[in-house]
Length: 386
Figure 1 (cartoon, rainbow, N blue to C red):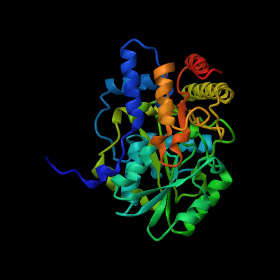
Figure 2 (cartoon, rainbow, N blue to C red; figure 1 turned 90 degrees about the vertical axis):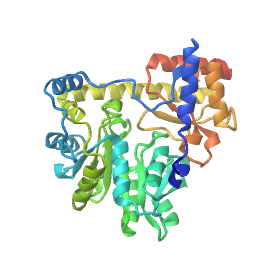
Figure 3 (cartoon, rainbow, N blue to C red; figure 1 turned 135 degrees about the horizontal axis):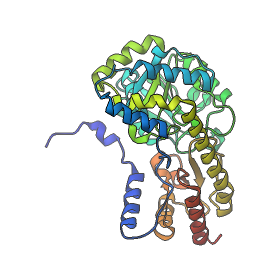
């Protein structure tokens, strides 16, 4: 058999998928499961977007596009930053990608030398480590606890940066914690990276789903940052596999060359349909759904405290609650298995998100209907005697 590259051994399994497979087997056997595991909105594409896709199919708009995306979509994304976030972005800096995953893969291919270190918080979205590894770099997860809002900080950069470090990869708001980096803390962090001539990749796929404070893009801090975003979360188009990068003007050519060779282009049909995301009617839909997510969060937070599933940092975005379950178990993996087996509630243990105290924490997703979340709380109440 062919010998696999050694990097494959450095990429760990996505444990949540094993839990989800177990939940699926239970459902197939007739058991009702409340899913609080996968980070996928229960909402789907807005009606105007679906209509735009149907029209694009009928018009045969399925041929290759430029590697950086169709011009109208790049212009629409830039206009969205101006009207929603108050940032003027040259559309030439926008590169349309095959989802945020495609954007992060492209960014790591462009910026991470073999053996280079990239700092990131622990806990973090597990694939962020693996994008760096796949590019030949070394992900360096830095333990980031409640006192850091579970985020990388300027002090972490000062303490952990060395001659092999190339940059940082952060997300705000974050998966799994739903926490955002405070604006002043982000400025300080970026300044520390700049002092060291490093890069900063900022994943903002949950920025549209921020509930507390002003929704402010890191793009406002200067044109030297690499901004990642997606149509998956705020626009509820996960399977459409469409996202974007905003890159420094001097790097556009390099990113375009890599995109031409590695992906050709993002889905042409999805690109044409995504133009309808920015109509007033569609934006009203997305904002109404954002309020629905906020309602779910605000229902769950006090209920979790009552259940002894303590939330050390209030999530201000995304659709996750990162809960301290140590009152009930020293092992979040065992506790997740118990919730699934005895209460029919599927949630994710901390082992997927890093090595900093993973047995203490679990991620609960509230990307499901409020009535189902209420059912999950009722079941956990009975199980935990609350």
